[in-house]
Image (cartoon, rainbow, N blue to C red; front, side, top):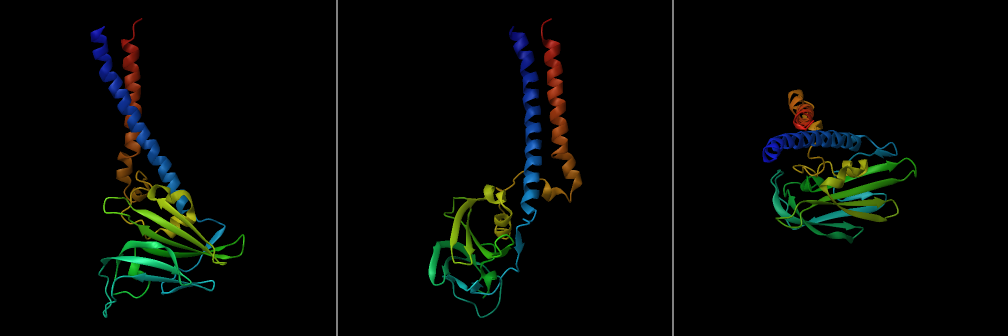
Length: 230
């Protein structure tokens, strides 16, 4: 009886490892399909040109961005740690947040990778809408979150606080955070779309792992049948 258990142990481990490889491969395919869908434009929304000038003007509204860093006399891309605050028509929009500020810039590029303004035209309602998204890092130890503000022509604001893994749920949100997601792997950590340019890598993962997983599971099943009594 003990001998049979010892024999079955590596067989069971082989099957478990095979199912693990299969599961990772399936997750990769699912996440790749979700990312592809996230990049597919919403037919209801038409994109407008991204604003760069400050303050941002939209449908009669004014959005100002204030920070605690001086402005350099020379243009540069040097970035320093700072804090920013949004204002909609003179009223605070949300609270202050940490950001890397480029003192040598006087436009929205001053907050590149930390603040993004993305306008759309809603073909259904015929109105314009502006998404103001900023990257939020509450502490040195905490992961990044993303504050997404939707501003309608009427001035109504809808605010969402999202984690990286939920950004791909809607095209508008995915597009509105495009330049804020640098170095963030949470959204689709196992997606293979970034590896399309390297087909040899795809032969290893997910195609290779899927094939190896199937081989291990089938091999374990045959061994179990061979060891079963009768």
